[in-house]
Amino acid sequence: MEMIIKEIEAKNVITKSNLPVCDFSVNPYTGCEHSCKYCYACFMKRFTNHPEEWGKFVDVKIWKPIKTPSKYNGKELFIGSVTDPYQPIEEKYGRIRALLEDLQGSGAKLSIATKSDLILEDLDIIKTFPDARVSWSVNTLDEIFKSDMEQAVSIERRFVAMKAFHQAGIRTTCFILPIFPGITNVKAVIKQAKEH
Figure (cartoon, rainbow, N blue to C red):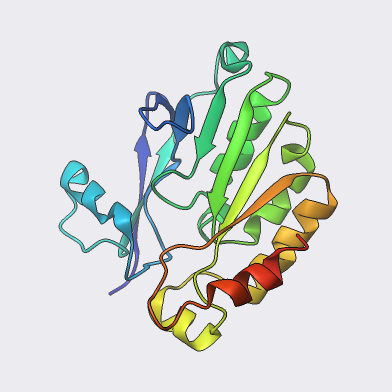
């Protein structure tokens, strides 16, 4: 089945969050091209009215420029709490880039979660934000198993991106989840990630 892509108007892409790790959450897309078999976010389907299975559709949120970015000064914004903000469609739509340009100089604190190296395109602007943090999900070093579980970029490309952000002085995290018993070698992942 081909991926179903729709543009939808959104009043605001930044929403108040109940998560203990942030003040606001940001999800510029509903649905995800990565089609992870273990995705926890498939529960979102009950709010979207999509008949398609999770991983087969993406709604691209279109919003007006942020009028008062200064209201996010000192606030933690978690970008990608439900779907990957740097899934392949971001290359075409640039929704995160537009958001970062609106927020630049506002004093907002960014926490970004991804499985992608497409985020390298925004390294220049992300490093202008105070205390920015970026995490990459890695749950295996086995590329064949990874490809069976998800359609995101290779593990190798994630580590290359992680290294680039680390070298740019941005706090990086290797998010080891989910852990597959007997498959995920946590020590090996840590060993590969620890320098970055």
